[in-house]
Image 1 (cartoon, rainbow, N blue to C red):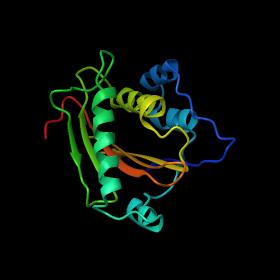
Image 2 (cartoon, one colour):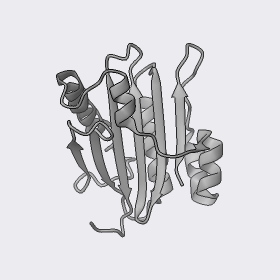
Image 3 (cartoon, rainbow, N blue to C red):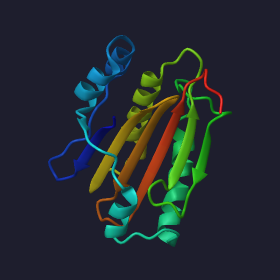
Image 4 (cartoon, rainbow, N blue to C red):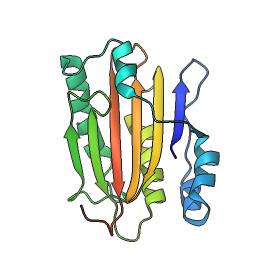
Length: 179
């Protein structure tokens, strides 16, 4: 089962706000119920980001796309690891995948001990909306898929002018899991 948020952006769309108290509620309520209410998700199959990016004129290995991938990796590393971060900076990893339009940026994020995966997802989404996403994206698709050991969050984002785009995949790995 995959939860997806898709925003085809128009001038009147506002950035979703995720309040800290809403994140805390993920600890006590059903994760599915909160994700549906909090993030207004709908169930649908996983998107093929490569075909979407190709239809917009992006090609694997393109210099502009490679620059965007590098910039996203730099920004992710600079925003995800503060004193409130649920992720272990010394274990988490970031991989550029310049030839993989489905997942140009792959991040393995190891969750700290005594932090739930739901809280870590909420933190990631808060950072995404506050610091990492394009200010006014033309297209934004976010998928959350539970895994046997953790959660996968996939994001496709396209800038307003459709000159920049990126597909990102975050694998959140609970503390008790070792890979």
